[in-house]
Image (tube, rainbow, N blue to C red):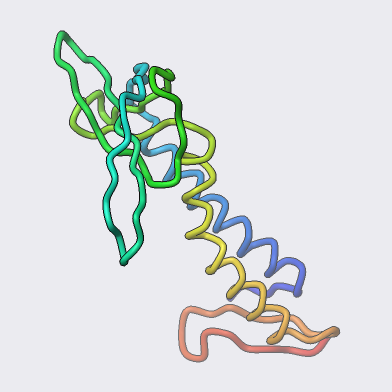
Length: 145
């Protein structure tokens, strides 16, 4: 049984979410190779009845040239050099290794669990209460101080 105050429970949840995010991002970097790619052109497609442009990035590995489509709404100039992350040094699994597309975009998927955790803890635990987390039913139980 683990007993936590409101602040401790908040920090534990936030810490776990940050740890999971860091581990997931690190799993892409460990054993990866970073090469320099070059923006070559845009392709236009209709997605959800909306005209969008996707940048095409080209990079070379061992005398072979590869191309991949980056996320939409990323803007580059023709000939601009961008870093490309090759997972496990495999040229068939490229990721655009920029601040926005590699680090910031995935954070959006961690905001919802963070908001759910914060709202659960702030509404469940009162001012002079603490929660006991157990591994049998009921999993959460409140106690007064």
